[in-house]
Amino acid sequence: MTAAPAEPGQQQPGRRARLTPRRLTPQPLALHELTLRIYYEDTDFSGFVYHANYLRFMERGRTEWLRGLGIDQHAAFAMSPPLAFVVRRMTIDYLRPARMDDLVKVETGLVEMGGASLDLTQRVRRGEDTLVEANITVACVAGGRPVRLPRLIHEVLAARQGGD
Image 1 (cartoon, rainbow, N blue to C red):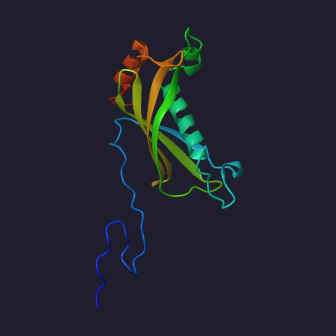
Image 2: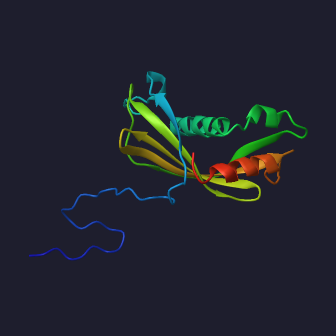
Image 3: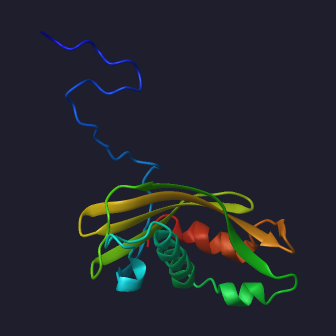
């Protein structure tokens, strides 16, 4: 006897549910990598990295990516009015857990540049395994309002978009 097909959104009897990783965005042209160690303070009671801590790791990755391009966020914020990058949107997939003492890499890459925003992709990896994958849109703001990317920042990113 064969089981009747499951209704859409339902699992067939006797089959285990399985998460299949999917690619959130196209691959960026160039990646920046930041290596981090997972500490006890990063984990929850289960011994896995607490989900919100990945946001901190990715923030560090974006900061170091900009620093590596010669973009000084501190100097931009010291301008009048202060210029900053703020997260406008983030889509994140948690695929596998990280544990205490794991060595992970945060990969950051530019996917697309808008007039006042940057679309980035970020991955947290342990070796060849992708643990977390995210799409982020950051907006350039001054005085609490969106502003066009400064010409110098636009030129630096456009020049580097083709490779590191």
